[in-house]
Image 1 (cartoon, rainbow, N blue to C red):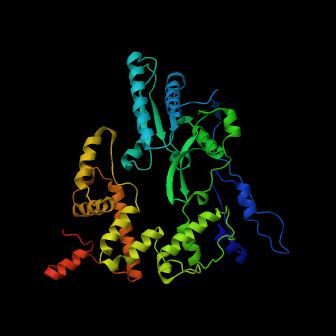
Image 2 (tube, rainbow, N blue to C red):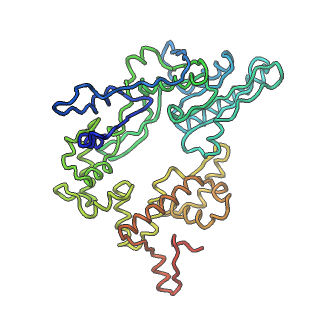
Length: 439
């Protein structure tokens, strides 16, 4: 945003349109109001485009809930028993919580049907989170189950999701939303250089967005598992911008590459803490991307061209010195994709056994290298990934990332060599192979 604003000052013909469902519009309007002497003093224009939504009735709890997961399960079952037909969207914070809630909801719903099948319909519970395989994610669009017998109540679908269902997609048929008021947020501690996912209260903007999910196809209801007083007094107006809770090493390297010297006085939309910027500068100096004067070094200039964290970029660029750039390229690609291990709730023992077969005692990085090599050797076998409980999508993504990084290496003349190549040269077995893998 800072770079766009700088560009807009130089280019009066440039039109910038900023749009979002949960945007703090007035903040952006004042930020982009660029006035030069003699200009029209009116601010940047602001438009509100109303969505095609139906009214949503919002309910709050009378008292704070001690356990939001239990309260959420209880609320879903109450809706299933007492409310008109319509699907339910329940927001929870992570994979483990979602799978556990799905199992408990299914058990309780089956008990209700066995007790009195004429009073409630069947319930289909579908999890949704980013590491779920694509074919299982598609289940959220399946139709709700039909009534077990003619004259009995119709079935209902419950989607239990992380906040990816908050803005990223619309699921037809959702009439009821259950909002416990929490989500996982990335938080970076610059003192210990650790990034973690913490369960935190959502903002008012997120709560409004969640409630809006219930009114997409017809009038709906939103059940908030916190009190109205807490909503008004405890929740922040907007979610904290990610720049305030991220490692800024990559952003600082980009700005240094663009020739921006004064990082503290740069016109940020939300200025990060000076300590976070100082830690980023320390790290880049330690990696030799910046010299002691804060100037970009030739190594730093190459690092900025790689779409990686500075540590990974440096590792990749210097790896030819140790004759392992081929292997480091694979490891870097594998570290740049989501978790490759699958552990379905009903096959955990088999998944752990498969993981043990692929694990290398020397550590996680060499394990990732081993998994990729095995994946590449077995590319003709479509079931290899499924049988070994690894994500085919993540591995295909790693292969694409690897090819992209290889092009970057060729561009900057970083050799792609391997200790295996050296061994083959010495024994006379050498032949050129793209991945350094014997096939």
